[in-house]
Image 1 (cartoon, one colour):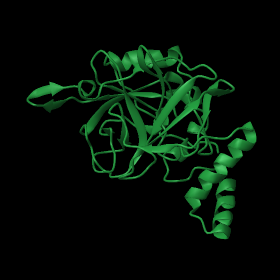
Image 2 (spheres, rainbow, N blue to C red; image 1 turned 180 degrees about the vertical axis):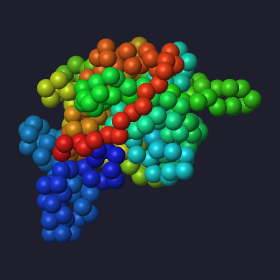
Image 3 (tube, rainbow, N blue to C red; image 1 turned 120 degrees about the vertical axis):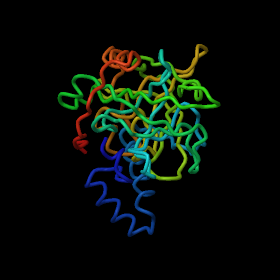
Image 4 (cartoon, rainbow, N blue to C red; image 1 turned 135 degrees about the horizontal axis):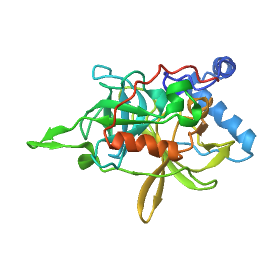
Length: 279
């Protein structure tokens, strides 16, 4: 959603008005109160207690995504996906505009530290319906990044960070771990262990704290065979209209086809400027 890109606008205009009024009345920071209100709304919808995300120093496979090398604030999240050349990332399509070239990925970013370096995006690959009409069913993007010279050898990012397997869409009730970077400059990632539900065809989960910047954050399933990505924050309303309920586009064969193009270094795409989130 657009609110995953903007600073801390995690709710619709109506919610913002309510948040401002309540914040003034209770003397609470507006952003913190917005999270509380979002969680309360989700709890009212589901009748269940909504889990809350927690801060984490992160993992090497997931990182913050910056619009360019000179920008200090990260706007989205991306993760490394296993590929034949070892240079593919997965994020939300609405996180990218234009060629994507020059964006910067910082895997394992925390407290302003770049423990695994900064990797420059070279190209973006998108699904046809996103290119045509920004179809929320295809709100995913595969990015390629340039190698770096490390200890005198050309090195791909996957050799440094490792990578996750690209999975398919999740099952209802399946346990997932979701990581994301709230928009900022020196802040850490957040993580939550929760379960998958569906809103129509869109996979969804409830966990509070997923504000701006967490778009593109991977939904991870851990098995004896390894860890796979079964979703990324995006899809309906570009990820959701409140911080406590998030969505993903279903990762069907359409996602697999785009992944194959990125992995094979096929001709890249030019992403449209993202429109509104509809919240």
